[in-house]
Length: 142
Figure (cartoon, helix red, strand yellow):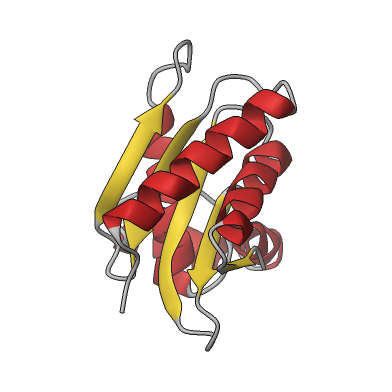
């Protein structure tokens, strides 16, 4: 099982709403299915260029390593060579900072990932987690 387009669009809408409520800078949100394929993405007016690639890299890295991008950042601090090698193996599609959140169902199975870029990494992660929870799913940041 994986995320549906309807759920992905709902996550995007809720993430953008959370960012607006908190006065975040313009966000770009990317939702991936469990296989790492883009289901849906949105970029708010005023978001800087290449935010899509950064958001996708946060989500893709989380899926590839089976942990939220916050945990990847912590691992990078301890094992920089491993993260550098993993980044190379993934063709550069790994952004080791918060904002890439795994999406799990009620049974704990990975359904996909959400990546957000645009504000601070902590705020990006908060918007993703809020939106995932609003969809009735579990957000895994670590």
